[in-house]
Amino acid sequence: MHFSHPHLKPGSQFHPQWFMFGVSLIFLLLAPRLLADHLVFKNGDRLSGKLVRADANGVIFQAAMVGPSTVPWANLRRLRTRRVFVLITTRFGLHRGRIEWRRGQIRVLHRGQISAVFLPGQIAMIINPVLYARQVNAAYPVWSGWHGALSAGVSLVRGTQSVRSFNGSVNVSRATPRLNWLPPSSKTSFAFQGNYGRISQTGKPTVLTDILNSSLEQDEYVSQRVFLFANALFNHNVAQGLSLQQAYGGGIGWTIIKNPIATLQVKSDLHWTQQAFYALPRSRFLATSLTESYGRKLTRAVMWTESLSVTPAITNSVAYQTAGQTSLVIPIYKSLSFNTTLIDNYLNNPAPGFQKNSLQFNSGIQFSL
Image (cartoon, rainbow, N blue to C red):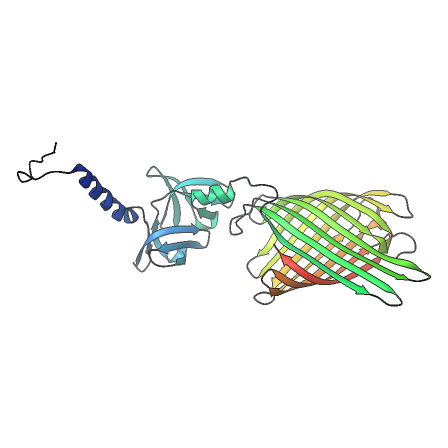
């Protein structure tokens, strides 16, 4: 059995399978062109390819056989995507559709109609739906997505006196979304700092150094720079006669500076505090804190950070305290670095016989997660 066609010569055959193969081949060859996003510069130059992502500053566009290029909005005359994208505004609004840039405006198109119009400063990010589903909107296990550093150091002396000293720290955080170039939604942070020392000598009493500090904080962002937070802090310091200090509260924070070189953040909170000393009854009071933290890359890889916290007590005027910390991280190899840290804690109401100030100098190896 064979098919005939009126325009075929007598005796020739029409093969539908070859015809469908040809149509499919032509479609595959033209599909990249048909599905390509198009970008037009102000000087008239044109590019076809795909929009990778965009933010308030400009777009990242990848043309055929060319790597990704960053183009400011001001240099564009027109941009039109063939694919659907997710647009996230600075107020965490969400819009889906094809993206068009024209006459200084970013337009979201849905079924060929304009559904929303924005200026560049109003958007936080434009990304494809797959990336949004996997990295932004997806739930992931509580044990994954943590970033930060672990450090440890040790000092041993054997002689007339035996000295053992250990220090370690953990500073990790888990942000949502996980991609650091996306606007933040929430962040969980955990920090621990410990210093233990023991000096012993035959016939002499043993001297101990035991200082432990830990904190847990949950941030919820109301904008790209402003967030509300709840926290819990725990302090133990034998050098000041402090068995345990607990503080629970919350407040507001503001990220003043955030760029690849430097970060500056200030926070203010109100918290309930309970102090337990070895030789004094427990005290409970309401206090407030003002904290600033600053980090800066001194070179391409060396990082310097510092923080200062002032904590006046509202219902117990003598129980005010301050704390300061500065550290320098020098890379050694890949994820390994050398860390040196100076910590100063001032407690105005220590146990009788103890000094108000406690100073620590720690150094060790740091591993970055």
